[in-house]
Length: 185
Image (cartoon, rainbow, N blue to C red; front, top):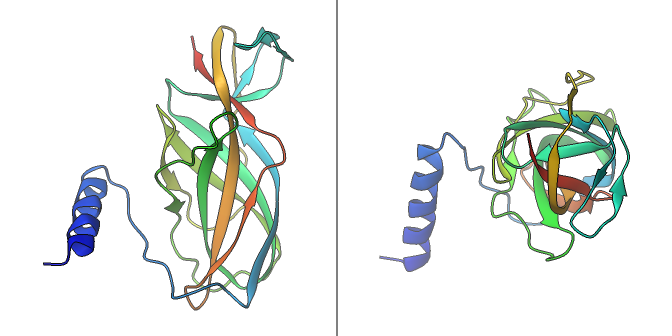
């Protein structure tokens, strides 16, 4: 038996047990889809008061954060040109450069989206394991919950990648700034 196949089957089984779907990707880079940028991100949680991170830097009140010990909804604004069929989100640590082990794709759109911009909402499980991406892109908003006590652990970049209508991958884009990751109390 092919060891690579066995590894993929095992990974698929483990992810299925966690209610995460694995989306196979197409055969090569897309010639019809290009992501331009992550235009914004907003977290379900924001700092109620200014807070200090582990390096002594002060984060202002109102700063969006990912609560590493709580499930967190995150809205990610993306711009593109071409035929976007699916959007995927992953994370890259600011200090370590480590990329999250899961790239999570949302459901396929009913038809390719040529609008050029939209917002994907994802839910991040405690420990920065993305659970799902909402179906399609939308202009919906999330309810922001202020948190008053945090222990900032680090920062992560939000990254996005798309699939075109043929199942080929677009380029990868990353947020310009990193979002703080903290334990929230």
